[in-house]
Amino acid sequence: MAKVRLDKLRKVYPNGHVGVAEASFEIADGELLVLVGPSGCGKTTLLRMIAGLESISGGTLSIGERVVNEVAPKDRDIAMVFQNYALYPHMTVAENLGFGLKLRGQPKAEIDRRVAEAARMLELEQRLDARPAALSGGQRQRVALGRALVRDPKVFLLDEPLSNLDAKLRLSMRVEIARIHQRLKATMVYVTHDQIEAMTLGQRIVVLSGGVIQQIDTPMNLYERPANLFVAGFLGSPAMNLLRGVLYRDGGWKLAMPQGELMLGELPQGAALEAWRDRDVVVGLRPEDLLLQPGAHGAALSAQLEVVEPVGNEVFLNLRHGELALVSRMPPRELPAPGSELHFGFAPERLHFFDAKGEGARIA
Image 1 (cartoon, helix red, strand yellow):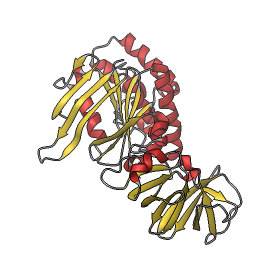
Image 2 (tube, one colour):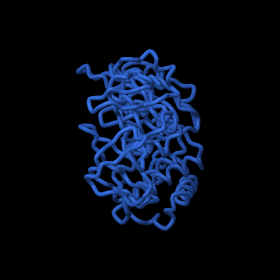
Image 3 (cartoon, one colour):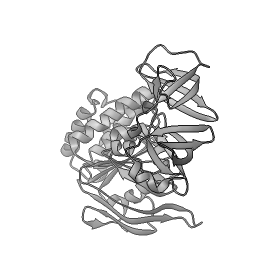
């Protein structure tokens, strides 16, 4: 395996569109790093640049100790798993798994050994003689993964490999990829638009928007301390509640919103917020931190219950506070009917504060 290093890597298309703007980070040897962001953010472009399938407009890309900007894809010692399985329909599973090794002139005994090892790891041993048409979607994706595994490359690149699977298969294959990584200790770069996949798979996550890196960190650090409003709103399901207003102090901290005054109380972040008195800010609150109160006494805000979404182990309350839509996450319990007025509070230390202007940077 090998580390991958990107130093001010850029992709600019002939029409002037910037696909990736100066990406700089290092993927450690054996790390599973996830590139995540909405459609068009540059994540697949960045992966294809690492693979050699997109030309590099500027900067330096290294795999191991070698600069590979001008190295052909076949000579980079990488293996790529695509969104579509790209299996040869006329070949058996065994032939699909071993085809790349056959092209490279590997001895038959070595091909058979690697194919058998990959089939055992992916539980495909009973399907080696089957053709792709006879396989389920999950089995086809396992074959696509196995074809990369038998190569034993320096780096695995996975481009939204689970997006064509149904919800149950996505979950099982997500676990399978995590297990494979734990067994192989392989360097993997995984692209997805699904923030749940990103959070559960990545040892670190690179969040992109508009070709620009927004934040690089571990999943929980991204969740607990998003660097800006984009990351705060993108990671988390349901998304973070965002309340906009003017921050001021009158006995305690308060937020003057169009919907009314929100009492924030004494804040542990107070020292960092002093410079933001009487300025526009955004206060972020995760749905699980918007807590239902038994009555109006001591509640920070009241909201009308619009829709209840029970999902088994938890319940989402979709709320309306004036023109502001909010979501609260709760354990299952008997709840009032839609249309009821409910009262909520929060722990001050669970609040996130962002600049309301510019890039929406975190301020506390």
